[in-house]
Length: 363
Image 1 (tube, helix red, strand yellow):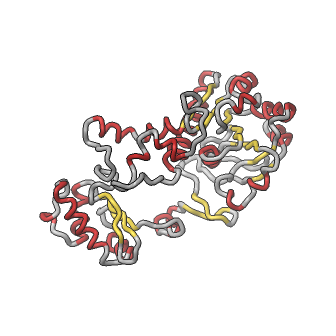
Image 2 (spheres, rainbow, N blue to C red; image 1 turned 180 degrees about the vertical axis):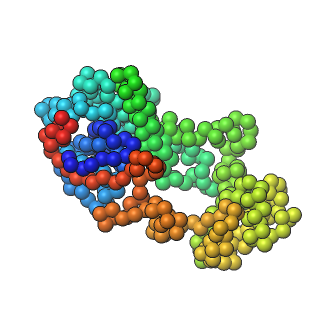
Image 3 (cartoon, rainbow, N blue to C red; image 1 turned 120 degrees about the vertical axis):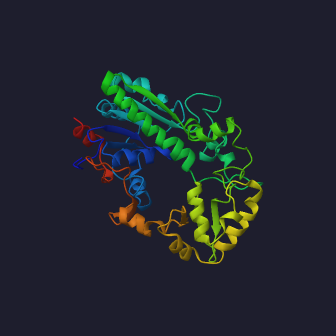
């Protein structure tokens, strides 16, 4: 592997066992930050890894194919793990143990190893052996039930809350914390990252509000769930939308001024007045196109933004100026984040290699 690695994680070696959902995004992000990652996939995986649709999620690391049911090839994987700082996998509990690649097997070869485990339900508990997906995991945490329109079924928020927010980000945080601990203590450990646990943590503020009686269980009845007319989206004349988020009184005052509405007629925190507010705001926004409103609010502190679709977002002037999206090998990518002043992150190259090439590179 001649790929030069830079970034704050340069020098960290991670073995990533092929999985779906949170694990590939975790591998992508850790690679962006400089970790050297070898992905292990089953035979025949190369075509999928190199497919155009995987150019983003599979970026930055090399994949090797192994039949882990073959003891000789499993032992090759263990040889690679012996040289790694961490492993991450996303199988149902017990699968890696049956392959002879569970935490005990790997830590026996490498006592400093961090073993990151990513599941929806966690390694233990009544549901740990059940199948599921993002929508199921966030359903039992109170997150899914808190989002959507009043009187209608909750609407899945893509897979951002379970897979990626409650899964990927907590797996990354846990592994990095455990790597720091291992470097200080010489002792590795297992990181049990469950999407249900992570999504519950993400709901902390709303549970705190609920505990003191300022958050209702009914959707569209609260500060941040669309229940208030100054924190929701409004349709424009061309069938598109503007997002309004003027929570603070000074921003709300500027919002009313930009809409040419009398502040005395629209007190912000008067629930009895909210239907009137929503109707007035909605009528205003329906009078112009989205882009006309975006130009009207540009540069103000009214906390209003155009709602862009996935094809429009990379072209927004702010995203263009910051290079939030940029081309890499002819594909438009979200660029590495966050940004570092001394050890900048970058996109590495994806590709394939043999297990012997991986072992030679890692010594």
